[in-house]
Image (cartoon, rainbow, N blue to C red; front, side, top):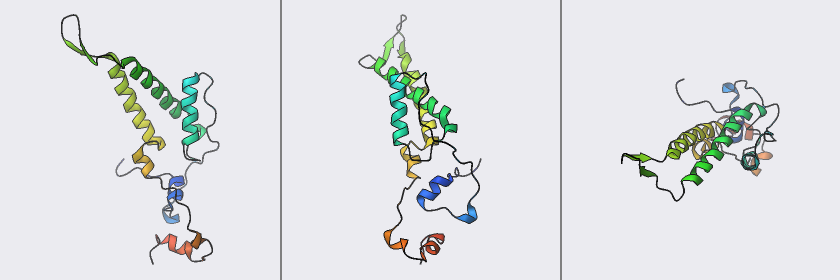
Length: 157
């Protein structure tokens, strides 16, 4: 696919850049994600609850559940590996005297890559969040019948 990824309609509406001439139908979220899976332990559930509480409203639906499960699982496992390597040398010598990297570093790197990729898809990274501009309408424009016309032209006068 060439060019930039298309922004979802909810993001364009939040930014105030939605144009009807360029609008295309999108699948709508039928229901937002709420409860964590039953098989999650306390640490997974706490991470899940934090994400659900801080994610923008209307962005994550039940269809995104497995994507969020993967992110939470990677996050918790990343933290476990980080705790396991704390205070230990990251490079050591094996029985032949060759330098070896701590085995958890490889796992941590793979989880970090997965988390960044998933987080970008869900709007959790600073770069992806930067595309979301939750602007509130100006108070002056509420009573102005021409405010809609100005917003169609991008606010140019």
